[in-house]
Image (cartoon, rainbow, N blue to C red; front, top):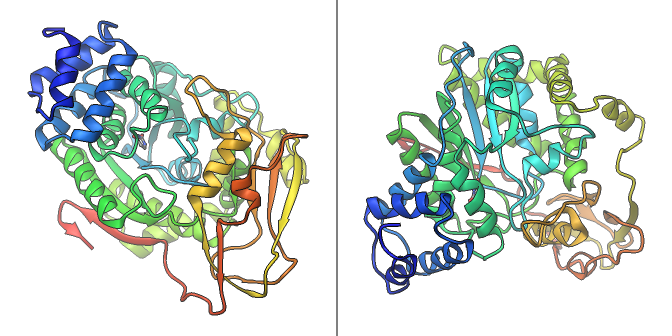
Length: 443
Ligand code: URA
């Protein structure tokens, strides 16, 4: 480190700005273990409070990308497109998009993360499938992509390793919801994948890191600008995360709901968001298609069994046991849990709000997410909702079934039902896809 770490931290604490060279030096020194985790944590908090200018934010993204190598993937001849979500509750779209797009002739090199705060993580969900291995080498990742068109793994020591370490620190130091950190984290990981194009699912609402729509729009703009500046065509969809996506929240439960989608079913909101993202990805990969043609190709792959077959191939290729999906179809699960159902204890009405953040926090408290970076997650616990926003609800009707470990009390954040609001009049139906941002602007 060219200056003492304590001086660098104090400069930001006192509201100063760093040069690009200083930020590169700081990240490199951290990766060489010359800066301790507690010093990095202090800098993360100082920066969270004092802010970063656009040049500092860009330098942080570049330094994190440069902390590792970039995949080259010369043997993958198909167009390579990935999608990344800014994080939500019940958001299982990655699990569906990867095999779905691969079954439509697009390669999806997907490097994912673990649960963060109250949100779930794709790697934790995949590991709920017995045997599934998310730790591939770059060579295994490339060979599987060339053969199947899809592969899903965690960050290796080679791919944006700075993000892996910073992500874990941010999760436990209350420094997640800050646009420059989120943007650098997502884009350093994604651009290391060697992709041709990227679709971002930027969430807004109670369960998102950027709860206010104006912040989420700003994040979408920063992400698209970073991607385009690095030569990767990048589109963003702004989607609603006020309520959880779908009916199931929790690592294994979300695998079940993804399988429902891949077999042509699943809840309408999850299908809507998944197909909107899939359409964006397919049009980037195959620009000769128009929108209705792309939609047609995708819905056919979901109903004719080809997306589900690709999912089985993916699971098998990564060591997972595909027989658990047949068992699921017969009402069985690899993760037995006790269940407790919550019932509506008020007058008849309509559901107007289901608070994604409270339900996500509840799943973390059940053991489905982490309080500390080193914690294990419980694959079986979670929530199955029996109602959606807009539904009529009667006194005594089942609202949700909580899957928990035997003898563990239901967290009050779930049992108090404060996550549910009802009114005498239903809300008008709305789309969960609110807007789209590309370098041409918002539409
Ligand atoms: N997803 C990421 O990959 N990083 C963040 O910081 C937030 C969401």
